[in-house]
Image 1 (cartoon, rainbow, N blue to C red):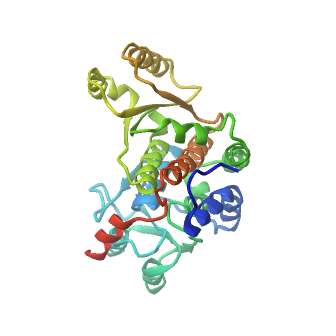
Image 2 (image 1 turned 45 degrees about the vertical axis):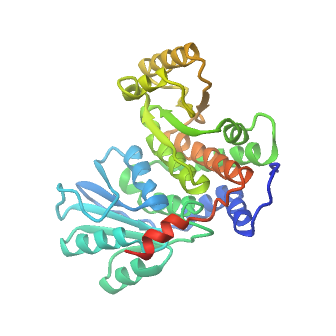
Length: 329
């Protein structure tokens, strides 16, 4: 178990307990999901915040064309053979609910997922295919409930092999043993300790969903800014900002099997940062299929943000700014 320098609130402890059980929750959600065989031309995935990251993950796991819609509106390339996947952990997300209603009026193919709420009510009233999953503590803590429920329902439709899912769950169990039982060689503790200012995550092209998840987790849990940028693009703009002293902490987020050009780009960026005496940290994903390469860093990097928050006397569960916005919409 990790050593915390500050007292842990009851809600924060509940969040930690949910993270500890991620592998079991993932397995349970996948096995209990109702299989849906849907034919479609393209996919739109709707969701916000912790629910919206599912769209980013799906867009990398299937060869089908996937649009990720984080807002009120459907993209322009919509037909009646478009599959619209709506996901809202709370079931009451205004943007997702608005898009769901628009998709229904346009006659699109729809499947919806939530822990209940207005999404469930609307789907039941209008006979829209719907599946309910658990939400524990918060939407971001409940990522595996929504992700693995949706994967269980749509894996055959999107062509995702079951063995990729089971491999990812096995590796979640291995990751848990490392991040919850060891202080040495612990990627979560190491990352939490490394960050002292504002983190910027330079990521490999296929790792956008995990990088985005880290940014969102850090902003919600730690109440501080965080940035992400694809490594190749960064070399044409933001890298120049290191010419001046900064409190930014660069994280090089990589895959072992990156394309040779991407590996070269990371090596050159490392050389440049070292020439400027800028401390950086490298984070490598787990080996295996792409789902595994995405969910495992979401696990240990997400837990790192909880460690960082608590050890800086910040409650990771509290979201006052988000409550402020929602109360006025």
